[in-house]
Structures are given as structure tokens and as C-alpha cells.
Length: 413
Image 1 (spheres, rainbow, N blue to C red):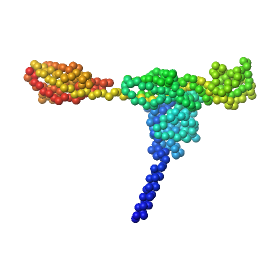
Image 2: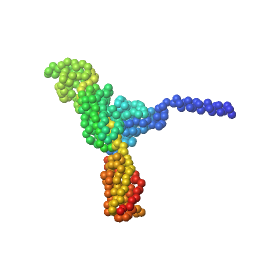
Image 3: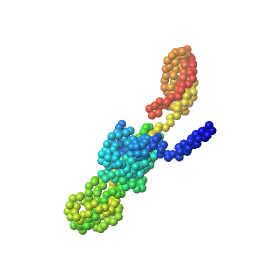
């Protein structure tokens, strides 16, 4: 019996040791990964099935495609099922061909600001990650990733706070830079102003509630890196060497003229002349070495911003509850005077409510007054009356009352 017990204990110890050293992701895969997701549709926040913006929405992601890990693609599957439709997302071999119903194939995905690459089903995610998906506005996908320094803020009504907008070329990556002169607004369309040279904007809200702050526009002087420059030995009539590149803003081809080889990017726009693709038709195709990558075309342009999001929760300041007052009664001929010991303000209130009735009667009558003294008239002589008083005030359309005082009785003269 002792031997059996020893074996059982040994087995339990082995199991406990194995569990203790089991990788954390094994539990994450079972319980899910908690992340936040924002979806940008061509520079504006995408809407869910209820017409609300998909902005910093919390979702729990599990291994939806059964590959043994929780990935960016799993997050997008979950987001489509929860906020859109599972039929509006399609991915094969890591390549996404449909997103939020859009079939352009022009998408970018980000995890904590870093591009998820083209193989979204290979990009692992973890608890606390912030995910952004973009249906790009630019023809060649050079949309500019932008994000506020906070994706959630809680403030009081009338309290001023600031957000800083920064970002980088979504496809090329790189260090974040301040995004200036971009229009900031609520998702409902209320304009809040533009970011300053540091990418910062200050704002406040006068009413309690939940607001989604976003931004729209172009980041000026963006360095673009994904077009190509091809060499051509032919000279035009001005004797300048011809180079061709794609105009990333329109998707059309252009011919760029230089007096000499432009060298490494970025290129000096003052030496650059753009013509339509038709100009190339004037030259012998054999001298135009099409398809040969000479330089990565980095030049300055205006890139459409991927819509950022910050959910702002605005709370009304805590209301100080009105305090129950103290009062005295004085009888007169058919009248009774009610005198409070302090003004209403001293009781955290705006006014008093005086309730009275003939002693023994069922129904109370009441009067309201802002003054600390009130005379109740047209009463019956030599009659006993009961009184009680409470304070009250109105804040943001809501009434707040103190409890009633203890009932006092007095007889008219």
C-alpha cells in the first residue's frame, strides 16, 4: 500500500512539474488572446453592422484556422464575424483577397504600429496587442500609418486634454514622426481642429458620454519608397537623361528628366519634370530598359492617413448630494413661518421643498423656495399642522434631493 501511494505521489509531482513549465501560449490558445482592433476604410473609420465605428474594439481571439497559433489573420476572422460578416474576409496562403467586403487586395495590417507583412496567418499576436487594419486609399498602398499616443482616455466634462498624432509610411515602415496639419474630428463628424507642428491637438467635451476621436487627410512631405526608376539612354530635345517612375498618388506612369544621373534617393524635386506616359512612345523601346530596377524611388509626396482612433469617455463630475436642513416653525394667525438655519447653498443645494398637511391628514402639500424663510398662508385658525423639509438641486437635467427632516408639528393661532 505504501509503495502504491509513493508511485501516485510521484506521478502527481511529474504532472504538476509539466504544467508549471508548459508554454504560456498553450493556455493563451485555449482561453484566447485579448486584443484591441481598429479598422480604417480608405482613410475613414470602418463601421460595424450597427453603424458604429470599429475603433479600439476589444475582441478575444482564438486559433480560428487550426494552425496551432493565434495570428493576425485569426484576429481579422474574429473581427469580421463580430462586427461585419465572415463572408467578407478571404485569405489564402497568407494573401488576403477580401477585407470588409472590399476586393481590391490593397490592404495593410499592423500590430502595435508595425506592419504585419503579407503573411497575416504567420504574424503571431499576444494579449494586449493593438491591431489596425487598413483598406488603402492610395492606388499603390502607400497609405500613412497614423496613431494617437493614447487609444483610450477618460476625462471629466470641460476638462482639457491633448492627443499627439504620429506615424510612418505604412508600407515602407520606419521611425514614427509627428503628423501635422491633419484634421481631427469625432466619428460623428464634429470638427475638433488640426494637429500642430508637433502633431498635437487639445480638446475638451462639455457633455458626458463616449466619443471616438479620429483624423483624416494627408500627411504632407511623406517619403515614398515603393515605386521604381528605370534607366533609359535616349536623350530628349533638351539633352537630358530620361528616367521613368510610377506616380504613386494616381497610379499613372510619368517620365522624370534629369541633367545627370540622380544618384541615391531621396531625389531633388526641383530637378524633376513630370510628363505623361505618352512621351515614352517617342523613343525607341529597345533603348528603354523596362523592368530593370535601378533605384528605390524615394521622393516627397502627400500620403493619405490611415484613420487613427481614440475612445474618449467623458464623465460628469461627482455631484455632492444635498444635505438635510435644519428648520424652525413659528405660528401666526392663519399662517406658519418656516425658517431654515442656513441658506440652500450651505446645504449643497439650490432650493428647499417644504411639505405640510393638517396633522392626521393623508396627503401632503408642498411648496418650493430658494429663500431660507417661507411663510405658509391661508391656513385654518387653531389647527395643528405637520411640516417636513428637504433640499434639492438640478445638475445636467437631473434632480438631486436630500432626505426629508423629521416631522415637526405646530398649531396656528
